Image (cartoon, rainbow, N blue to C red; front, side, top):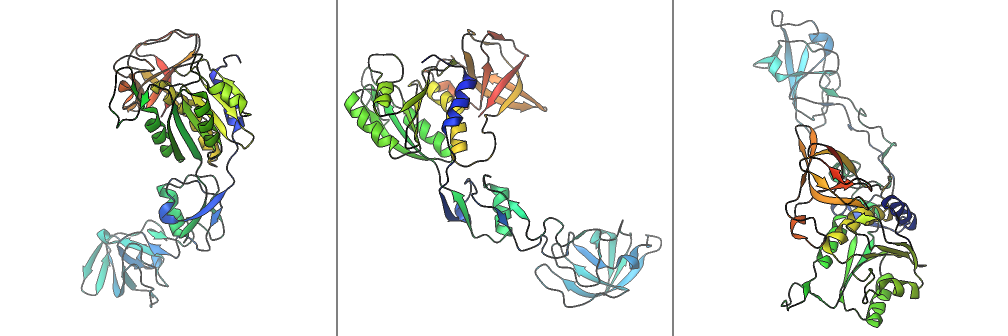
Length: 408
């Protein structure tokens, strides 16, 4: 299968993924970061009733509309209304009530005078400045939301604002899509875990941990299957287990053209239809993507740590978003930024250069990571939050020129 361009790979991968239908009902306390699976409405108006937006005095507009510092109006204070109390009095002409922010307005009050524009004298209040209009500093019932309308639609991520809306709508529980399950396995005789003693020729497996973090950050449930030796029989058994327990499988290594790269043949033997087998991207060219009859999508990622993560950021993240039930076009987020450094590429593949995307005085700046841009160099990948993109055919972006940056 011929190597394809990045954009074609993106389209193919998103077409392979179907949004999850399974849902679960969880408590509001557990809902942060989850994807809403139901429409939410409320039988309550918001605000629930007319209330004060200020600490001050509730009055009748007609009583105070003509007052001034030279011609103040004096009103009788007949009651005090804190928040959380239902007023028991009705305000008449010539009267005022002491009222606090959020407190329910009593009958007869249509305007609030902020306390800075008053002078209290015993049980009377002197109004020194008129309101600008009837209803000033009054939050009218239903101004923000009318009962019965839809507050939130399915497919939105539940973050802090949505949590507040759900709480206001009195939703102690909420129905969400289940989290996508993602199996992870690392292949290679040379790999050891971080807790093992490093021997000559061995490599500590960082991919298992980096991919687990990536999955958690993107709302998935990681299933870590560990390190698998380059043994076709053992590898095949592990892949069978992976595709039968997860919606997506991420394996690292074994997808290039070496003598110990068995992944592609095993996927074919197991009935997987290989849809992508090499992408014109740097780093990350040896990417294999296959679909199985049970719906599982398999990503055979390169073994080099940077290549594996770039593949996840560019291709796996949009697939996870679509799978999770999140609404939208599931496209990566790109920004235009001025490069702080000269950026170079060979121009034969779409090249991704890692560094930091910063907002400086209202403009985005891309700063190149220190050290070599090598797919095996995960050290200078730390603190990366953006990937500058040099399209095929572009070999140089000069310092100060604009570059497209994939935001992480």
